[in-house]
Amino acid sequence: MSDKHLASQFDDDLNNISSKLMEMGGLVEMQVKLANQALKSFSLDQLQDIFDAEEKVDLLEVEIDSELAAIIVRRQPAARDLRLLLAISKITTNLERTGDESHKIAKRIRSIVELGEARKIALGDLHAIFDMSASLIHRALDAFARLDVIAAANIYKEDDLIDREFKGFTRKLITYMAEDPHTISSSLDLLFIAKAVERIGDHAKNIAEFIIYIVKGTDVRHSSLTHIESVVQ
Image 1 (tube, rainbow, N blue to C red):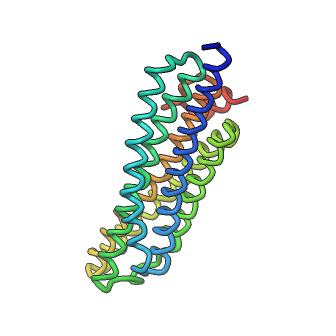
Image 2 (image 1 turned 90 degrees about the horizontal axis):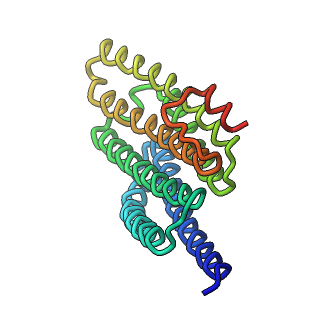
């Protein structure tokens, strides 16, 4: 079999697994979007869609991991091709965990609604944080599709803003609970929701790091923004 034919088969393998990753990403993005909408409306109507998508996401994670292992054994890739496969494995994990966070948020929203405690606390800040996190996941998937390291670096930068906003919202919840003990139950649910939202931003940042790894061959995990910006230039 010619080297050219082997290369063509490998390209087909990469395209197939990348398509599955984007399919998984689309499902996860839908989960995040629905959870965000449910938090704004305190409606239970779409929560089941989030739960149903969870099983599909989990199945895709298993399929992708299995195919990655088969490709590595069969093709024995090197250099950038191997980096791409390793990064896809890591990105898949972060997408699955993003879906888990949406699932957690949906369960907490259901708890708040069933307790009849919706709307007791002003949630403008939390809505803004959720919008940012949802946007980062969308942009991370878009950056992966284009292998855009500049977009990936910008995602890394904006996750810091989410972290700061999360801390500010947490302080507000503590104040609410101190001033009105009746808000403690719903405040705790909201605290778990806020943490899950913050973690969605973290997973988007992690995906961005692996995009940079694919393109530049540099592992930028736990690096400063200054170092990351120097790598992508």
